Image (cartoon, rainbow, N blue to C red):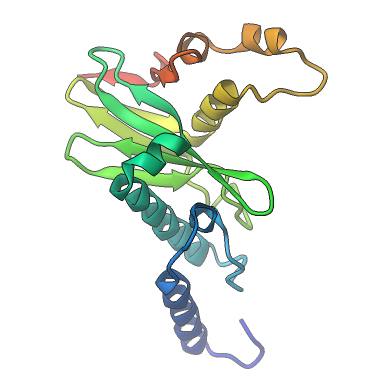
Length: 195
């Protein structure tokens, strides 16, 4: 809050900034993943709400443009029972460098949930979502956001400079190792709740 500003003035200013940021129409794929400087760093409610809307916008863009979605998709998560679609993982480029991961999950009600996996928060422990729900008619799972990042790291071959690809592959959990070649993954057995 600015010096001498009342709570009501702060909330009005915050809401106006929120609307202004969301009214901006991205022109490139990288713009969808770009995190603008909003001036409310540390306001947990603002950060959570802004990330939610920002990721929904990117998810809606991918749904509207399936060709772009195919280019950015890094993995698909499917039900271990019958192979129903549970989630997609996308990798957006950032300018001038870097990448941002978007997870888009499916629910039995026909809804979808989206979240940026590696979004920057002022306080990662209290603001960032921990998991995204995914379900089909055979069961459900709460998929941790870190697991989506592991999917991208597995597919892209990310590793520490001191390790070889073989060492990294040998240490991967079984569900990631099995899905690497096809880019189709199943939730870990501990997370899957059959109906």
